[in-house]
Image 1 (cartoon, rainbow over the protein chains, first blue to last red):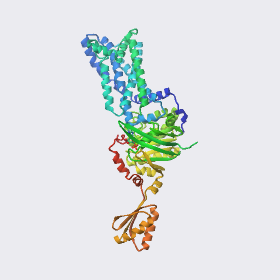
Image 2: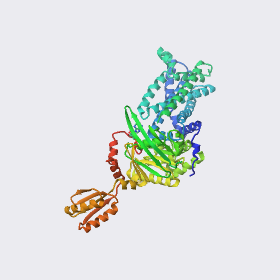
Image 3: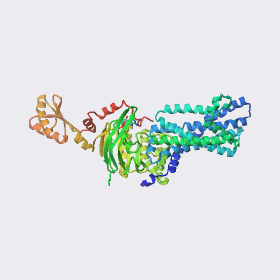
Length: 261
Length: 337
Ligand SMILES: Nc1ncnc2c1ncn2[C@@H]1O[C@H](COP(=O)(O)OP(=O)(O)O)[C@@H](O)[C@H]1O
Ligand SMILES: [Mg+2]
């Protein structure tokens, strides 16, 4: 075994650290790609069982219903996937492997950012799989719209993932506290986004609250983008909501990582 | 200019839990020279992990400081981190990761070039007997296998100094012996300085070149195991006689030659805690014989580090461990799989 040049390790770049942390997080995904597909069971159940109900109540065509519903399912994938990702970190905090990375010469910011950026990969794979599954049933997406939509979902996922990690860092070994907060937030965010049922039929306070829900704006932006309606104002709001979630999420997450021990 | 690899000066750590503060570590100062194998020995809650966590930059000291491999833990923690290996009390490998993958990631974290990292990972897998599990996930490993991976991870960047926090706790005796052989081999091959904690007396006794006894946040003794035993706890000798009268008559002679207080475990037996018992015992038997007092039974038991601990604190390590059990301690290895 040859000795290692220590000067390489000290004072290294944050970007490289982030990349290495992300690479590590992706290794189990690469080893077991089926895990990414398996987590699609829940959205597929929604797609398969909810779509007929929506068609039944609205009386619209399958294609029109899917055009409305699929973007919501895509946002749901991001919401559930990245919202729960902090539990992995929490587990590693309890077993000791997170502590090991804290002793490595990695910047604290990279330990958070690398994990958060890793979320992009399952998001992209899952979105494309769902789109491919919905396609034979008449779902159509504008290719450029799909691409921009993916970027929005990825940014939103990075932000949500960061917040989930921050929650894990704050709740430490109290697993129940993580899930209590996570569940308390995720279902209102889901329902008040109008991704499952239109909010128009709900009371006025719901519509008001939903205007402050970034998930709502992301869902609306996705619908217009997939339809090729790039000029719609909702697209702009969606981009803004995703960018703001990413910025706030990363800032909160990195801060939580820096003060953790 | 100094050559010490660890210089700790007045390290102190207080934790506040609500209104109460816990003095986990108080005014710990010591130096360690390169190449040594040093052990912190102490009961649960003594402050061993907290000291190591300060030295490895995981937590800042409340006061005091340290230089580790030539760098200050407070002002240049990243320089310290690049130069040390750390195996904590938990499991270093992530349960979802495969063994070899985790080693390669660790190499990347320390800036080891990919090609070199692969070679080193394979060499460590080989020397730590991990070859048959290299593509398994950490979750699937036994306690002993996990611990060997932890050590491999700690050595991935060939650090000049490695900290091992209770490396063998929770392992069965066979795995413990095995693990120690690995630690000793690796040290032999690479001259790595090893700083470890243990609450197993026999380990500190057998393997450490220097033992720092820790209790209630302080280092209360610091020497080689034989020196600690010689200075802090004597050999226990007992001499048995045919009658209580003989024992009575012998007691004065024994007390004078041993220069120690004697006790009487029973009517015909005299006991004493003495220095250099192995030389004293034959001499006592000869002298007593010359006085016409025949020694019928004789034992001389060399001291253990537990006797040292008892002499220092008034309680045995086991008692001290039991006393700590009322307060929660971090989960240890072995509980899983
Ligand atoms: N993060 C913490 N918060 C509060 N108290 C702590 C913390 N870590 C350790 N302690 C306390 O500090 C003392 C020393 O603990 P530790 O260093 O883990 O001992 P050892 O490793 O020797 O068993 C114990 O009383 C322990 O409960
Ligand atoms: Mg400990």
